[in-house]
Image (cartoon, rainbow, N blue to C red; front, top):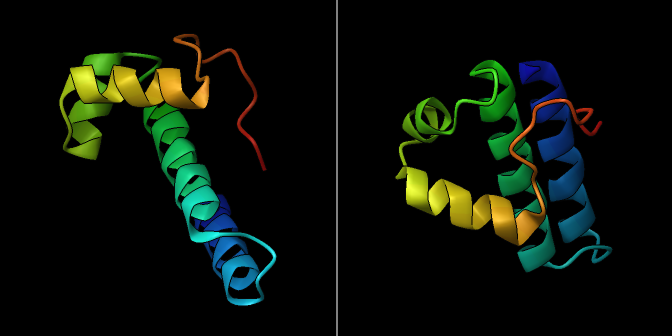
Length: 79
């Protein structure tokens, strides 16, 4: 998962530098990826995922709602 995230980060970086993606969209995708990864690593436990990300559970839930991330980890991790 770390390699996938690193590769995705590099491609987001390249897309912003090339003008194919705006910064706000790239940051949102990066944040969404990290949240999904944290939820997967904690088997969907939002409290533990928030701890991994060093944010409150409330903030995690707000971000999950913003990005349309379900509380279930049954969704496939985006590549």
